[in-house]
Image 1 (cartoon, helix red, strand yellow):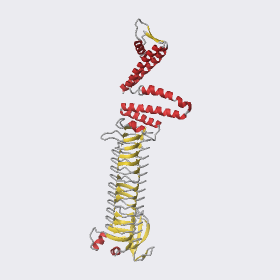
Image 2 (tube, rainbow, N blue to C red):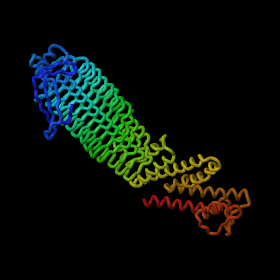
Image 3 (cartoon, rainbow, N blue to C red):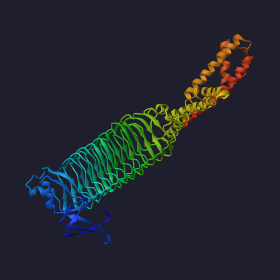
Image 4 (cartoon, rainbow, N blue to C red):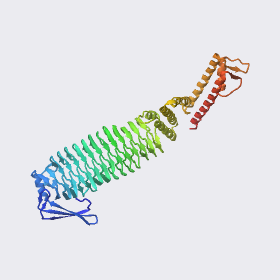
Length: 580
């Protein structure tokens, strides 16, 4: 049946209607459909059934088959009044089918408080041309319930409080015009619940406090143009949840405190408009949640206080659009923002995570990881490949930055070095110079380790010879002064060097022909001469009152060089501290 019509006209004629399956009706309804300009675009024939005859079938407990029939003003409330039944008493309906039927009502197509007995209940291909459609508090037995390919001319539909037995609930390929779509407080049985490829247009789409059991929930390629999409307090069992390529329009999307159960959740390529996206307090027992290549608009994105300690959540290549994104005090097993553009404030102060992957991201604003009023317990942080244009608020000690990077199993030594370099530059930009020094030391150490590993992999003589420059760099740059970040260590190295050369002079004078010769009448002991000569040589004073003889000349030359080097090293480290 055609769906792209703006209005229709009904003509009822006393002409016998015969359905394809042989059922007959004494009258025929001719429906003519018009476009928005009033031009006729199609027409259909239906059996024009008297609603009272339908009521008689229900009362007599007979099967109700309305396939290809036109039904006007169907109302179980009217049926109850006619038969003196209490307003909320369930009305048993046996073998109900209304495929490719057409319902209309001045006010409401009322199926509320119906008790559909076991067996398939089908409205497949049916149109509800006029009037609200109400199935509130109805009960469905075992069997599939089908609303696929339906059309609701009045977008106000209500299934609130319904219960479903074992079987599928299929609402696929339906079209619902603007209005309130109420699926609150429903209890679904085990089986597939599918709204795939349905057009809900604008208005409120409500699944508040609805229970989905084991099976599959399919919202794939569903389209919503605006309004509100509300799932909060809903509970899912062990079922696969599909929101892939769903278009939420500019709706306010609310998944607060939803229990996603233990199944797999898929929001891949879903499109969120400029409304708020709220997952605050949502929970999951296990599995995966994927938002890969999803698109979000300018509204705020709230992922705070999520309880998903055993869940992996991935936003890989997601476009977060404009607006702040917060994961404040949430708990995940793994959270991935790999290859995303973080263009606005991102609050990643997680209460707990085994891995936070923000590799290959481009950061243009602020990424906040620094603990404030609770510990940020992240075991591993992957920054490899990050392009840092903005700033990362992080603390070297409180966030355990060293451990976050060195515990990575999936990155190379070179990648770890690069991550420490990123942190070094970031700390410089945020004015945390002590943290900058710590990050710089780790950067240089892992850079050196990476170089040594690369040389060792080449094998042969290069592998053996690579230890010489590596050892020299370690001793001179790292051990002696922590890469010019620690003036106190340089001073300590100077003291150790001075004492070492002094002892060397004592030893070579005692056990060889070398000597420290005095050019003055003063006669100092071997120890005094050694320490004095070492001091004027180390600090390049050179009074000339004592001079080396023999092997002591070679030692003095080396000591003079070391003295000049370490004093320069100290000057660089000291000035670096003072100027910052």
